[in-house]
Image 1 (cartoon, rainbow, N blue to C red):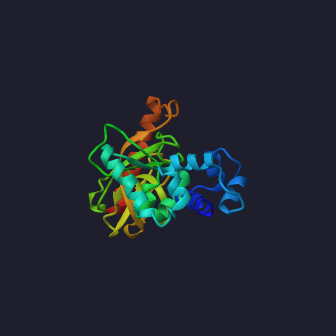
Image 2 (cartoon, one colour):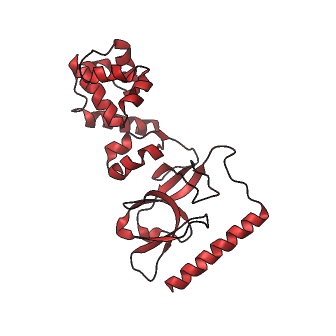
Image 3 (cartoon, one colour):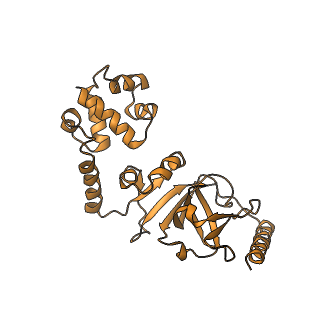
Amino acid sequence: MSQANKNLKYLRKLRGWTQEEFAQKLRIKRSLLGAYEEERADPRIEILEAVADMFKLTLDDLLRRDVSDNKTSYLSRRRAQKLVNGRGDIPFVPVKAAAGYLAGYADPEFIDELNTFTLPMLSGGDYRAFEIVGDSMMPTPSGSVIVGEKVQSLDDVKTNNTYVVVSKTDGIVYKRIMKNNRQKNKYTFISDNPSYQPYTVSSDEIAEVWQAQMIISKANTQQRWDVNNLANLVTNLQQQVSVLKKRIN
């Protein structure tokens, strides 16, 4: 049953799971999964059935076929099923997948393996969701999910709108963007939290830009602001914008 062992290992790596993560999903010990992958033991039939359900495969696929050679067919079946169902699936990039996303954002196979969800109020666009951490964009709380629509060209970026930016230097960040008129192909990233200073990024460092359309956060995590806090925030932002305009002009 060595083909099944090899398929288990391939499918785990396809999803980017560690042995511990995959073992937890299968409700077995990591050491047992290791034995399966190293062909020191044959997977039990109930384990194979669980894997088949998880990856929408048949037992015959797992037992008799090399699914790595059938990768294109496997992924195409998933894409076709999405189209048949008419769903506007939104791929979700959690924090733990951020590093992998920087390497695989342009790879359709990598994107196909991300978890997805749907929002009935969004349709007809190219959307992606990103989990953000940190307090640089407060009052948007850390751990929020930003749903963004793909910006095809940096020329379409509008000053003071919020964007998720994928860059070679900073990874995945959520910021406001202002084009730097004094420095060609330079963009200034601005945080909503005035404690964080603006900084400049070159356009050739920017891989993707997604304009924020929706923010999803847990209940009771949104920071509450009183009138004085809001007034101070607006004043600080106005001062930052004034300083930036002077530098640019």
